[in-house]
Length: 162
Image 1 (cartoon, rainbow, N blue to C red):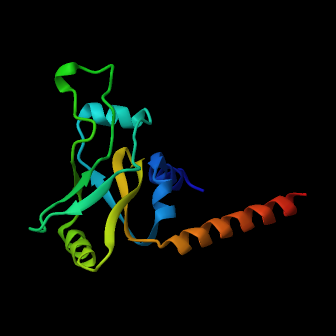
Image 2 (cartoon, rainbow, N blue to C red):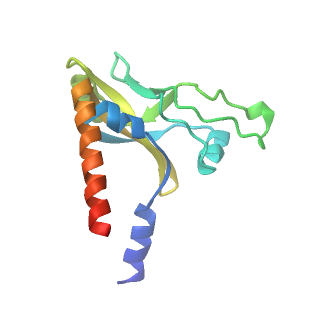
């Protein structure tokens, strides 16, 4: 392998900050989108330190189709930073998307029962990104089936290990 391909692979690597494990249990993920996050400097420092709570977050596309917003993504205040630049931990944050992606999301959200849930927050090529999932809520029997399937896989892995 040449050095050029090694550099490209390193640049494509993700540094995952937080994943929303609850989303995969509560929802069927139908489609995934990658969006940039518009953050302040202290928020980026807090993210690089791995401080982020994503479990209650959700995304909304505004009615004018000009922007998408991420709500309830909690990034705690960076305690070593300047208090003048302190940020609100749960403020709404702009998502950086192309207009075509926003219109596709809006059309999909018009369907009944679909919502945009952030699945993970990560850094790619030094930029903060969020992976959004177009999700539909699971019924109780679907959740039970998922638990049953996970237990069966765990049992099979346990027996194979022996």
